[in-house]
Image (cartoon, rainbow, N blue to C red; front, side, top):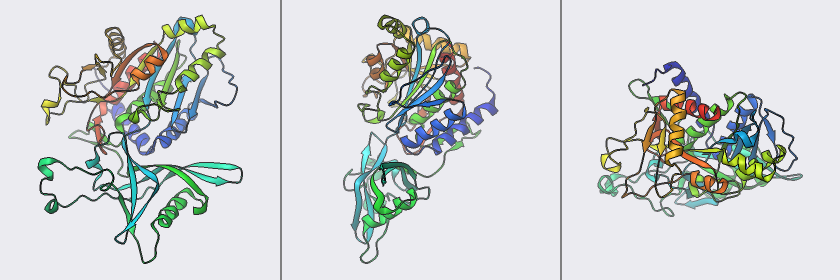
Length: 436
C-alpha cells in the first residue's frame, strides 16, 4: 500500500463534505462548482455569445442551471494530443416537490412528492428534511431565477409504528409512492390554506412576495451535515456521495492541473439518475457542442477534428459498490472491492459500463503513475447491473472510454458512506489522467 499523508486525506474528505453540504440540489452543486472555478481563475462563457479562447485558457459553461463543463486548453495541438475528459453527474436519487404540492387533511398540511430516480425510500423516513432547489419569479423584464434553500428542518416522513406494521422487520418497509410519501409540513388552523402556507414559506426563503412565485424545482434533502466516522474516522457519511464525490474529485483534479499538454475537460451533467435524455443531460448535445466549439476556435478542419477525437479518452467517474460483509451473497466472489482500497475499474460485457481491456489497462497505468492502488469490479451475473453516463457519452463522441469510481456503501440511501483515503486516491488518479 502507498504511504498516504493522513492529514491531507482528512483535509480532502472534510473539503468534500463542505462541498456536498453546500450542494443540496443539482443547481446548488453547479453554484458550488462555479465558486471554486472562479476562485482559480476560470472564465465563464455563455452559449449565446461568440467565444474568444486564449492559449492555455481556463473556462467553463453552464447549461440548464444544473449542468456545467469546465476545460483547460492544452499546450499541444488537438490533433496531436486530443482531449482528456472526466464526466460525472450533479443529481442524486430522492424526492422532488410536485408543482401543486400542498395537501390538506386531518388538520395537517402535507406536501406531495415525486420519486426522482431510484432512492432507497425507507431511508427518508424519520429524518430531518427540508427543501432546496430553484424558483422562478415574475420580474419587471421577464423572469428571475433564484436558488432557494430552507436550512431548518421543515418536513418529515414519519414511520408507521411497529404495532401497526408487525412484519416490517421481516418483509421490509414498503411505501406506496402516491399515498404514503406525502411529507408532513405543519398544522393547519381553522380556515388556513395549505397552498398559502407553502407559498409563504417559499417566498420567505426566496426573499420575494408570494404573488411573484411562478414555478419551482425543489429537492427534498436531509439537513443533517456530513461527518467522518469509524474508530479512526476513516469513513465519510453524507448524502449525495453518489455522485458529488466523483464530481468534486474531478473538479479538484482539473483545478490543480497547470499547463497540461492535452486539453482537459471536466463535465458534470444533470439527469443521470433518470436516464440522461435531456437538453442538459449526458444524452443531450452539451458535451458535443462544447467540444465542437473548442475545435472550431482552434481552427480545426473536419479531418483534424476526427484525429483529435481518436486521440481522446473519456473517464466516466461514478461511485462503485463496495463489499458489505453483512450481505456477502450480493457480490461476485472475485470482485469484492474494499472501501479505502483505491479507485475501482468497472466492467460489464453488456456495455452497462464502457471499460474494455485496453482502457482498463490505461487507467491502471494512471493509478500506478499516481502511486495509488486500484481495484476491479464486476456485478453478479444474476443481478441487474446499473449504468452510468459512460456508454451514452462514449457512443455520442466515438472515443475510448473507461468507467471508474470510488467504492461506497448504501448507494442511493439518504445517508451514504465512503472512504477518506479513496477521495485522495481518486483525485490523484484523475490528476494523472489530466497530465497525460
